[in-house]
Length: 187
Image (cartoon, rainbow, N blue to C red; front, side, top):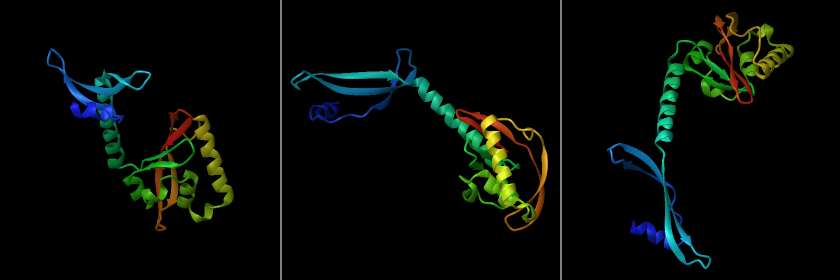
C-alpha cells in the first residue's frame, strides 16, 4: 500500500503481518509477509523487497495445540479425582478443584510450593517431625531425578489432615512424567 511505502521511505520498520491468500484452485491459506526497503551503499532506496511465506502448517499446529490444551484443562478441572502435577524441581504446578475439595487447600496457596511442604501440611500432627519432612523431600527429589520409585503406579492408602483439621483417608497413585531435564510427577 502507499502508506506502507511511505513508512519505509521514512525509515520506519513494518512488522511481520499475516494475511489470507487464495490459491488458483480456490484454497485459502495463511501467509506471513515481511516487507523491507533495500538501499544502496549510499542509503538511496533501490527497491522494496517482500517475502511471503506460507504458514498454513504452523497455524494448523497452533490450532491443534490450543484444542489439546482446552481438552487437557477441561479433563483436569472437571475430574472427580484430585490431580496434582509436580515439576522437575519438586514444586506443585497443578492442583485441580477436586484436590482443593479433598484437602481443603486452595490452588493459589499451593501452586509453586515445594510438594514436601504441602505434604507436611496434610500430615497428621503426630507424624510431623523435621526428619519426616526431610524424608519426604529426599524421596521426592530422588523420584524426580531418576523417574523411579517403588511407590509409582501403586495405590497407596494414607490418612491425612484437611486444612480445617478433619482427618480423612484417601487412595493415591503417582507416576513419573518424562521432561527435558528430569521427571515431573503426576498424583
